[in-house]
Length: 393
Ligand SMILES: C[S@@+](CC[C@H](N)C(=O)[O-])C[C@H]1O[C@@H](n2cnc3c(N)ncnc32)[C@H](O)[C@@H]1O
Image 1 (tube, rainbow, N blue to C red):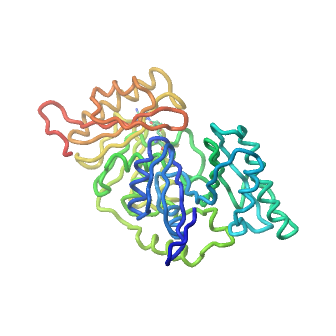
Image 2: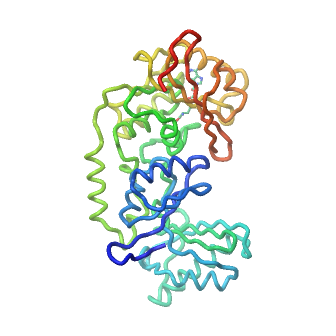
């Protein structure tokens, strides 16, 4: 929550939820942003810092899905306790009486058992506080609330967070249309960070689909803030610090490199996907840093010699392809790696435990994570034939 140190600005507690498995990556990102008291929890990372850090985290975190500010943390067993403690919070800081709110609640292992009931009670407490003070009350708007609130009630401990981000941070603002089976941008960025790719050397995704890995890689290599193209919930709060935000954004624009001395390349056999990848790269303002080519794996020859890093997300059947077609894709990837990626590290995301065998390589590392409800592995392969030189570590 908020603590006022003896001197200096007020410090807040934050929580950044993320995909299960990426907690360590988010924690490293937060350490680089100089957050304090970083603590990994299941499905997210708690941290502490001044209000400016909340903005910085929204602008720069690549692998988290939201940034939330803790505004209430109390033990609660009865409805009256929940109502009473929520009324005490100074909601006017984040919401005008004519504004709107929505509460997303999750409840587990508590005397109050229904999330809907907890959300309704908290909502009543908030609007009653406004009614008492102003004679009017804010409304609920689930689709586009001015103040999105996250409520968790776990083992009778109530935590209320102001969702500073609004829409999920994976929505960077550059994907032109919803595409079939894209990789979530925050997961793609998290995996690139987990891979240890150095951001200073070439990278290839030979089954790039709509280009998520390549575009996220370009943003990382160019030091381009992932939040530059979108809006955040905190920008509509009454206490929004416009001046600090303008400085942070101007600094981010200045940091973004406009050229890179190495190639970031995507290829795919699907012409529509390549078209979308190109449009997305343009929208993400990294068009000049990437190239996309319409080619099937058996024809595709990377435009530079090895070593480069391969990062890819082949089809594994949940949403795309079936049976033989799937196996053909993995066979083709195996051939590509053996023929064109000698001396390289390859990172392959799979939600299937059998298909990776078709690559004919042994994974040297397995990084587990969830893609929605699906258990996945991000597999690392060190590609070299017997007699060939092992890839540089
Ligand atoms: C799961 S999708 C990749 C999604 C991608 N990561 C994205 O962000 O949109 C798998 C991709 O593999 C491509 N693919 C499958 N077999 C291929 C092959 N033999 N040659 C080239 N591309 C192939 C499909 O066209 C599809 O776009």
